[in-house]
Length: 200
Length: 200
Image 1 (cartoon, rainbow over the protein chains, first blue to last red):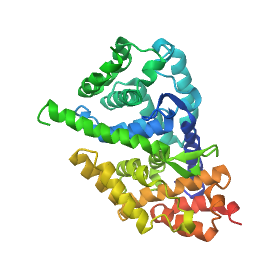
Image 2 (image 1 turned 90 degrees about the vertical axis):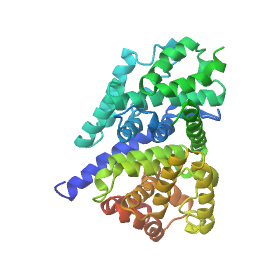
Image 3 (image 1 turned 90 degrees about the horizontal axis):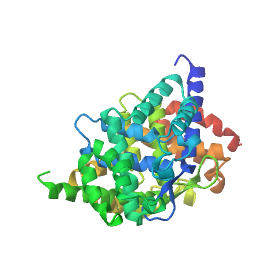
């Protein structure tokens, strides 16, 4: 900051990003609210996940920094403003994580984080890349929570996307269970037992 | 944790709280989305505010812990599950912060935070009380952001709740401006200039 003009330009960029981020509230997910009343949007999903991190912090492995996990979860879905939500179980599990989806998400990250002042752009882009790469303890735990929350929504709403996409027990284990267990093994063990009634 | 039974009872309580929190996504605010398309709900509002804290951290005074501010903002509106949103400008500005509203919010906090295991209940209740009291630097900055975000939504959507409740420039200064300026004076100076067109 070297003068009022710079402060003002910085605030313009900060609010350009914050106003653009508002659009995440209009991106609909395959998962519904817990009461099944409507699809969840990716903005409120991001809030719920950050709250999951706050409340389930004791499920993280040693060395996980919950404050960084919360920050990651706050920004993890912003690219969906351009790309939309790609449900884990859609297209027989092949759409999520496809090279086409990942390329589109990179372009979205360029545009959306590009609205920010340089320092914030670099920090938040790096945090998002870390989440996507899922290699650090913080990112692995964040990814676990991102998989747990829709499982709980499906359990509470009577099947949800498992019914929509005719998911099998093996598919649940492969697409969801292994990712939850990687960051939060006890959590997967506990919640998997509750899914049994839906996968006879 | 002294056994699997205790871990399981703890997880039951953690998810009882997280599932109840889901209902915040169905509490509607007076403010709309930035594009004016529909009312904002308090879940997605809480996400947006936490993102505000992350992006506008440089507007906080020295000594503010942004990680604590983010945690506060994630839980600050949970009592609305029982009480509903009480708009700042409704009832000529007298409903928000009335003794009746505050008493109802205390009962809601008893019930909702009461779903958590003891340690988490105490931690999150204390964090919420700190936010409500608005005396610590962290709470004062969190309150500033909670006032800034609806101002930006009104600016972007063409007047919003200022039109709904026929708000005057003096009322805006008193109900909103003084609270933003207390925690983030440069931010209020910058954004106040942008409100001028709506208060001729």
